[in-house]
Image 1 (cartoon, one colour):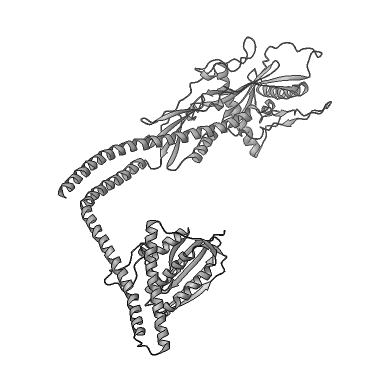
Image 2 (image 1 turned 90 degrees about the vertical axis):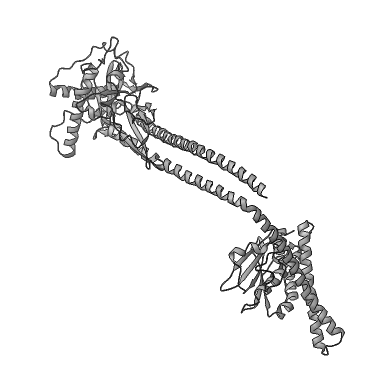
Length: 638
């Protein structure tokens, strides 16, 4: 035995050493995997934000690209004019009345001579305005001055460090704007030192992939729109006392050769970063303008707007707030800013082509992974402790095995003792009554009838005991056969109650039946009889000290199962014993001191019979005392 213990101890010691090494290595791998997984989650969130921001910008640029060129004028003539209509209606530009339109701010139009017009300025109006109109006029004037002072010098090549972008080339207008992407170097954001980041391009504001629009309009409408805009320009020049500089054009074709429609060519928007007085405050290192070239026959002009950086940042923050996952937060750093690099887990660089926005993704709890690893280590060391405890259990296992063998032998002895006792009691009673009747010691016929009745009851009790043992033996060997026939379960139960009532009456019990309406069903009558008899016998045994010695037998149906209930008012069943009482040979207490009789097979057979019917058996304690054994048999209909 000691040799076996030594061998077992060595094997377990080697296993523990291997487990400790593998556990330590696995925790390291797990920590790296969690960091990689979390980094992947941050990258996935950054990609979702990129797609959401790109979707918003795509929708915005689609709207602006499809916007009619006449929207950039103060007045315009609608295309829907009835044939032969002499008086053309003039409508107010939909861009008038405010400067900001989504991500666009201060829409404007630049003529070839550098004259700037906007949908919010009409110089023929009085200079006196009040309230909101005065504020709008002030803002519109400031917007136009910004264009004249900052954008036009870049386009003309007079700004410091800029390339000249001519409105007219040797053969006309040079489009798209040459050198626009090199007018000013895009200010790139930087990622926090030591942190991982990735470039996320958003090409929505670039001209790549966009197509030039070519539309047909009535000549009369186009000429009226040009004339309307020209009148406004002349008034503007008159106020500024600037002589008009009209580029050389070809002489107009004769009226005979003029077509009824005019082609309007609208090219995609091109971004342009322009320095200004407050360029350092811009997130892209300068003001971002988006310009497009519009050509109507020999007329060329630029249209565009300034990108509303504040609104763009709000849209990015809205997407980030909506797409953040649990345990994540974000910080949108300005151009050239790095933010707090200590708690930045991932830096997503939103690259718009002309500049970047750095979206720093952070952990709400920077120690989250460390805490998870600590938690894992706790479980690991707990497991090692359990293994060490298992070593002690292994050393005690031999004693446990010996104890189990002793317990099994005692269980067999208890069963033999119980069976012997159960057989001896009815046999003794039968022999006593038979001997008294044989020797004619009973003079009264009533007394003799009582003895005969007792002999019959003891014989039935003996038969039940023997039948239980035989049934259990057949079940254990798999030889128990069941015969399912259609019948009335209530009738079967009533027969059992009638048979058990005298024996219960001798022990002071009364059996009450509450039989519900049950449709005929297929069942094994012998098995159901044995189930009810064993449940009644169990109730009589364990409720012997109850004040209320009424046993109730009920039947009911819920459509799927036929329910049989046996209720007593005994001490009830402890929760920890509910599963054990259906085990074979189980009886509470020691055999020598047990007050109740039985072999421990009754309830075990009840469970076996019910399971053979594909049913169930359960126990429900009732108040103040008692228990209900509920049996459910499937309602089989052939």
